[in-house]
Image 1: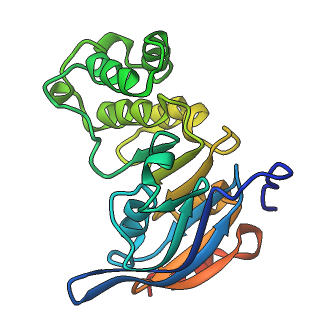
Image 2: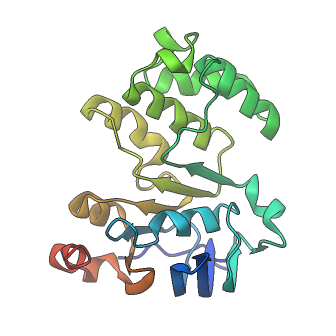
Length: 234
């Protein structure tokens, strides 16, 4: 069942006919959906279907070439500044400075967002990085780097999380450690890209399926089957 938004709250995301192209190659075409505040949409699709482009549009990093995109009440790209500090992005790249330590990276972001430095130490401990928190990011394993990147994404308690394969490179212990930060029921709305159909469906209220940049599925997660999701990759 889809999570109900608080009475009177604006949608976390509202897209109307959004399109985006790279030169002559169309990455997104006529994508439209509304995600309630606090709800999660799992985004599925084969490589090149437009999933990462969608996330970058929602993050304000790419300008939509068609349609209308509103994130947390801010129309993109004109009002991107209103949504940027209320959004947390976890991309394929960790968006961390490799020569800085974990704590140095997080303290830098804490200052940008006006966050108390005590939250940095609490997050580092929560994800099991206390013993490596003063080591440069370049010395960490991929799994540890992913944990640090998740700390960066949630540091400022965003209202919307944009998550691109958030459990990539994490062992079961790592996945368990970050679940209270980015898992279901943690508070913020979530746009979750996943290639794991079963895990993605379990996390979602809504499902968006993309095929060749077009919207092939938009439905409550309870009504979408594993076969429906796997059909996007056929």
